[in-house]
Image (cartoon, rainbow, N blue to C red; front, side, top):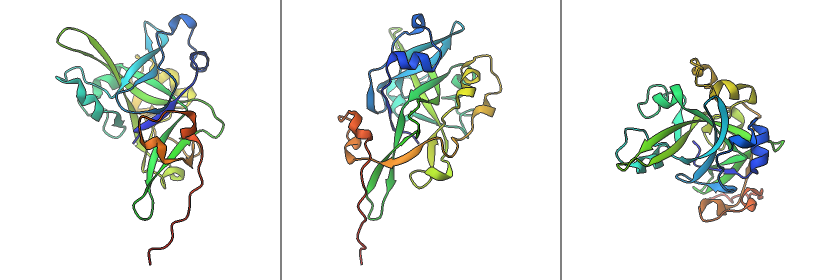
Length: 230
């Protein structure tokens, strides 16, 4: 799964990376090294045949929901079932997006039950794009909430020691097809992230507190070997 991630690029860097003109930047979220569910996140989507940078709330709220708090439980959608789930299937057909990221965090269970956080990021430092879906929800007064979810799949072999799931990181060659609302065969793009796309490094426990937010959260730490219990 993906429950925390980092996205701290400048608007200029994101616009260049995703081929977006200056007039197609609606908004971007602030640099954040500890993005948690329900926070605003930067997204790339297509409207009126233009790629746009905008912000969405992380945690998809289906249009038919009574209460928007359901979004906190819909931060991820599994590629194995997304096409069949009522909460996601309409968005899969018509509202796909990219969620730019520098990397994400997972917690691995160590001997003794300690949960050790890892930061997973491309070795070359490039920006990555999670496959996402977005939705529009209206409250009783007609106010709009735009929200998103991240697609996940089985983790590649080189990350399975950290977690058995990982976000779907789309190759740049697939961005256009994923964003194009006229693409009907999207299942061919729903492939698990491949080995070697990111590397995992252990980081400090501070990332576990959502109030902490600084680039130092992604700094590698040295793990101390746990002594045997007996």
